[in-house]
Image 1 (cartoon, rainbow, N blue to C red):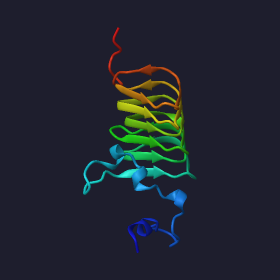
Image 2 (cartoon, rainbow, N blue to C red; image 1 turned 180 degrees about the vertical axis):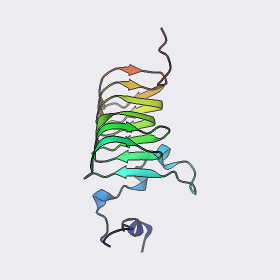
Image 3 (cartoon, rainbow, N blue to C red; image 1 turned 120 degrees about the vertical axis):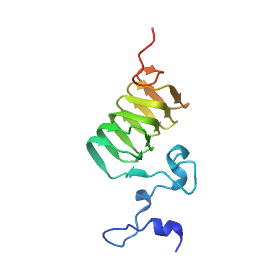
Image 4 (tube, rainbow, N blue to C red; image 1 turned 90 degrees about the horizontal axis):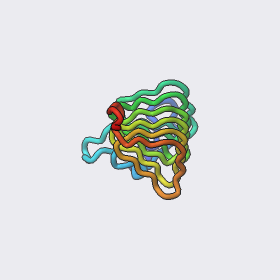
Length: 153
């Protein structure tokens, strides 16, 4: 049995293999989320395409959103990635934020916010570094400073 087949088998419930939409290809996870060392990979949580979460979400590990999240997301010192089919209707605090899907809400990052070509953001951004790829959609304001720093005049 290959590594991919083993990864597609859930460790709980029935023994049915997961569908392709339930499995995220490791190569699709950004390197910043995967970690740099091969033997010591940081844990990553994934909210799948069919999952709809409503409320306050906080985690001590990196998060990949492929489904829908409404409310607030507090990632603290972790990274957040919204995949192309992901929808985030929330204000976000994280270390690094990568947007490939749709976001309605304010983004606050201590390191950077990146909106990829497929990304759409309707909200304000506060981060020391902001990158918006050609073809991305952005409506809001940008403050290029670390969250919590006093705005310079």
